[in-house]
Image (tube, rainbow, N blue to C red; front, top):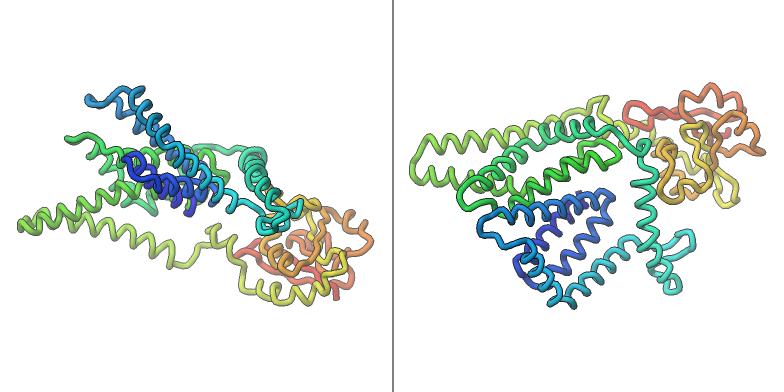
Length: 411
């Protein structure tokens, strides 16, 4: 939401710049772009889709009878840029400053660089400008999940289903305004066209470039489409008010029916999806919230682990699904197996406990000593329990209705 929100702010500043507004809008545009990139990897996708929309608006303007040639318009923009070289340079500095502040390590990077440590400021800036790009490429390109690619049509179908279920009024109003604005007298307005093109580009490219299919991806389409939808809603209200002032009962009734239909659909979705009990198949609730009994793991972990300053591992994760090589999860991209440790890994890290991994019974037996806490998937209980003499087993659901793990604690 933050990524597409900052992209929307950048869109607003860009419109004001095109209209010839002051240089402060250039600084705002630079800061908004940097914040959009810093908010999410998909922020880059949102900005690229916005750029595609701008190119389409620039291109279809050439089809208007009164339009000047594209080369002439490009020359005018270039002349404006040359005349504003100083504000452009300052805008670039604003972008770099915000980008560095967002991505620079505060402390604890591989070389100990920290933005607030005078002796390591240059190292922190280097990490912000270059390591962030390398990690983005590593996470989003080289180590893409799952398997670097996925089928396009199922992801597109999921996104369309989300829009139909959760944002139907916005989609209908936005599409209607686009068609009316485009094919009525006066021709299309650039702002409306740009917003719809942005939403359309997001509908095409977000399912293609995302790594997971999730309902929240709909915001990348809904947010830009909300602009023409707002125009349509305002026009509908004005039309109904005009009918009311002229005592035109049929038109008033039609406006009220349309508004009630829009509100009813939104209210029905909100009541069923937000306030109704969660379904057992809902992965959002299932993976985000452990069961009530898991609180005892959190409350007892410190006592189970004991002192954490002896340098030896205090917690061992067992099983191939939880195996992570030493240091592999210190910085992104992290292996998928690290996600199988959640939420236990958060509480273990908060204690400052050292961890180790063992993928097989042989690897566990080969250890000179076994840590006081061993965590394994519940289906591995039979293979690991005989190897842990003197340990007491506790079983927890790390999801709302599943993802069971067994925690062996040294007695």
